Length: 74
Length: 224
Image (cartoon, rainbow over all chains, first blue to last red; front, side):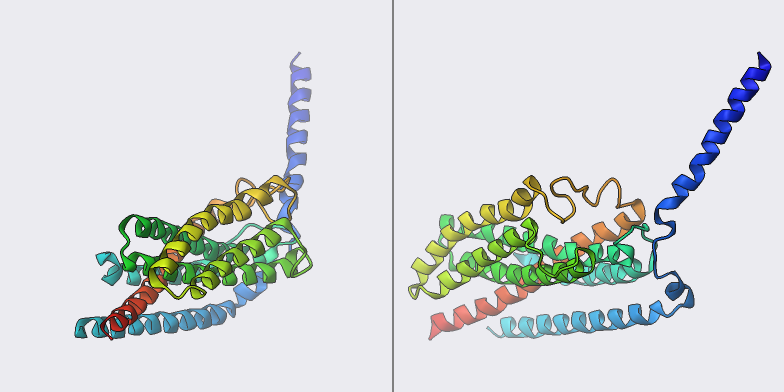
């Protein structure tokens, strides 16, 4: 009785473990920019984009302020 | 209307978009075949459409308001929102084409989503052409307000509903699973939802600047 249970348990365990590589499969071999980010070079790109966006934002704020002056003149 | 003259929400919008630029490029994303790192485009391509929907919605609300009140200011809001919406429409379409080239294989594969988005684009171009073709001010405002009220639901049906009823390469359509249960995990949600909200306000900001300029122009013309 106990032996059968042990066998069953072992079987379940083996089946469970056999799932692990199946779970690990999707995505593991998908090429991502891992090395790029670990090298840290991606920060340069992010900084560039950030500078461009900050510049545009400041520009928008300046237009906003000029408009406010025009509106107050009236 | 006092809202558009305040500064705090503009600062907040800029800060949140800055956050999504950093977080969107540096935080982890799910590893998906075909998509690879391009999944990050979700943070920048989809918010363009959210911004477009926001300003088009404001536009149609003010068209209805114009028909009720007859105030020329309401007509100005409607047209400047539509102008801003067309800008985000173009940006959304072009970023979508860029993304499609590297995931679907072609810039334009005559996908239902792409085609109906193009038709909806023409619908709003027609709105702007219609406006410019009428000289008389009140007539122009009235006719284009009515047109806008009809164009808006057609645009929503074309972009959101029709492509979902057929097979489309675009996520969320036909037999395709959306970016949702499977592809979008919580790591992405903390960037995506703030990006949606912030870009909507960005659209409102730009539209409000356009509106204020045309209000000055309008007043100047009224005095002359």
